[in-house]
Image (cartoon, rainbow, N blue to C red; front, side, top):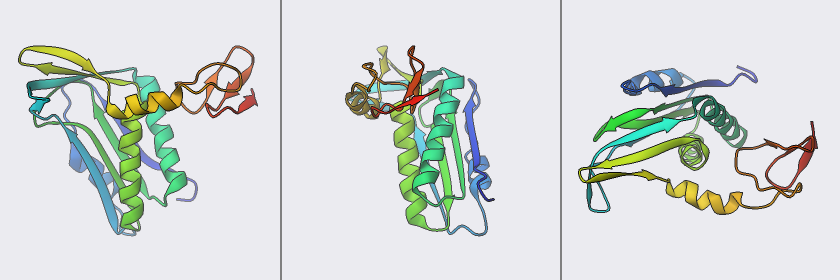
Length: 186
């Protein structure tokens, strides 16, 4: 599998539960000694309020590109075999899975560290929005990872504009910024 990224990334339409075994089976490989997983589920309370369900919306084309970029970043930092990521849209009742990540690697440290990185980056950067529906109302929520990242993203790049939308942002002056202050000619 030289230079081939074995990823399965899906954003599931409303009323399509995540088949966890599908993603575990996808990443399973005889050469791998570890499969690390994360399953984000809807809990029944938040700050003392009874939760009925979560509702997710996304800008799917951008969300898919962002998740693929996150997977590539994980591969550049850890020695990974396969990555499976699924995120549901629409209503997700209490006890059901909203997001699932499975990563296989030869060694557990790579799989575990990469799994944490992938879910943290998804929650911080991917354009998927969550509404918490309570028994007495509802509210759109920002993930704490997004709020923390927003402080970092407010840095001004070399072209004088703030970056907020990924590794590169196209600007009117014919350059691309890498959001770290660097600019490349397009």
